[in-house]
Length: 330
Image 1 (tube, rainbow, N blue to C red):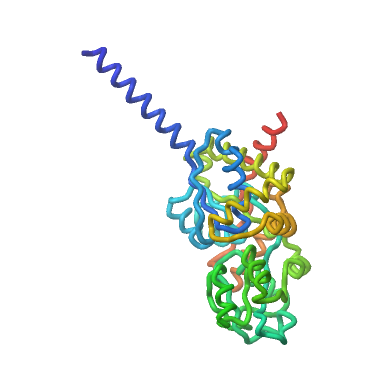
Image 2: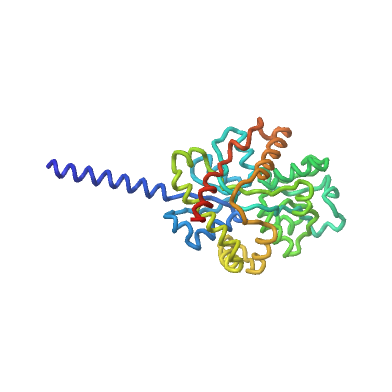
């Protein structure tokens, strides 16, 4: 009887241990359906997550829902603009950026083709501009406006999801729209609008890298699942290297992803857009990235969007990326 009790107890311990290992190998990742998806989708499709012993449950959602998922505990890691990391950190949320997902400016201001007179952004003053308020692109635009002597009050802002802007252009509901890829290209390709401001204008005025961070919580990487987080970043760095060295194959794989979210983009178009506007050559968060996020925090404080300033460096951890790069050199 005692032997049976011991065997049952040992089995229970082994089962518990096995369950814990399985749980630590399971990671819930959420991103939106824009360029944020490239590296995670490649990592999934090319087996980089599997090679690290991970079961990554990847889900696509809206930019705003990303933050809610992380705060609410339904996501372990999310991909979001660096500017948003600064914003939510300033509200006292346990959040940390652990790697770059991509960088490069893909923001655009497009004008409906019904408007034949508008040539510059200042020509839109007083007109109706559609924008997804609260997004990283919205935060970047506010910073840009402050640099040229304008503000959101200079326009009639209509809060609208970015993927709804093409339909709003077709119906005539908007004079202009603040958007990002792939929606900007979708509008241009359908000849619904034209660009009056793009990445070059943003870069010239702001000198931005427009970083997108893989973001989680300090609790997750220090206590809940440090090993799983490290293995996730290992796979991420390997996928990023693949994207940089296999452009044709990357574009081919991403055609499938966009089809899944209802967008029919050709391989040549994806290749052009992915490698023209965005960069995938580093996973390391740099001082320039951090300075950009810090500047965005200060603008948000000045405008009363967030209660107080914070030191962004206290919400960045580059150790996982350092370890991943070191493992690649072995």
